[in-house]
Length: 153
Image 1 (spheres, rainbow, N blue to C red):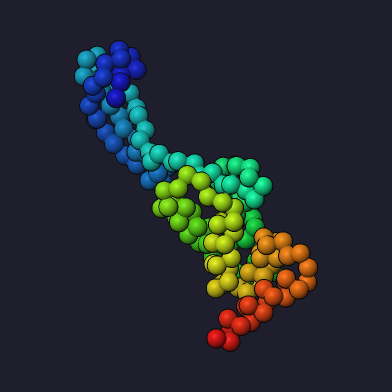
Image 2: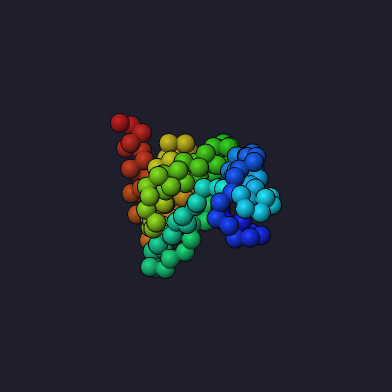
């Protein structure tokens, strides 16, 4: 680590402690040459995930968009906020572990629907109706029939 006072490239760590609820490490360092002390922070490098929208536009992944979509689908349903946050956490973990820098909004939507289907079928249908943009009542009914068929199997 380069000293901010004399630009010497070597320093020694005097003290280390976690900060930001364990998301970073604060290090007190001392320059080997000038003996002045300075503080550095070490944290995990987060590579932003880019979402490719249906129209081809790209934007940075936004947790709040996923969270708000699920909250709307679960409105007036017996689904706790903790459950909703867990769903978003699971999706983010999948995204981070995939090592892909880009993902389509379609893939994210499918992940949300797969999780909602097991938690609350009404919330699933609500989300699917907005996400899949059903063209007419028949396409909506087809989706409902799939759910009912899965429930009887």
